[in-house]
Image (cartoon, rainbow, N blue to C red; front, top):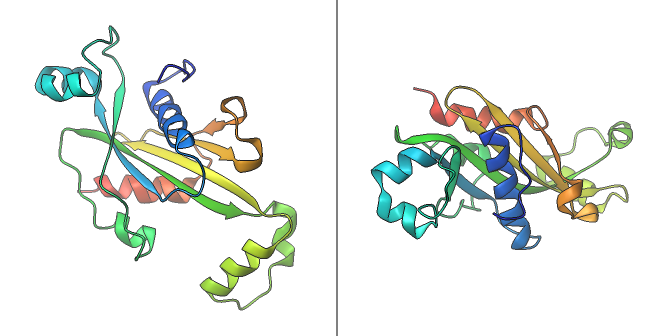
Length: 180
């Protein structure tokens, strides 16, 4: 994507490219899953697909190309769905973009005890300090990981927070899709 800033690593660039793509679709989107493939390998082994993705025109072949997968089912828990995924060898990594509600750490002491999952979700949704956040998390087979967080109230490419340990639980769940 042309507006994606240059980043230190191909994985960070891929995360920011996915964040920009999903951001362009607006908020209130379903979770989106992406395979990450080595761009040079894709160009060499699948030139027709690379051409359809607009990669044949790019002088830069180093990096990762995100390829969106089929829809993530909404009728089952995300962690359960991720447990069913097995990637072919050509996939170097994967990424997931998902929206969630979160509370600031100051609100943790206010959480009522003994709430079920649905009750807790309603309580968070009704909390005055809740924040809507889009998390894009990516992992590679070699264990590298990166993520981007975007708050709905600060929906700007310059306000995207990046880092390798921002969403460790989701990164672990994605990494498990590569377990042998």
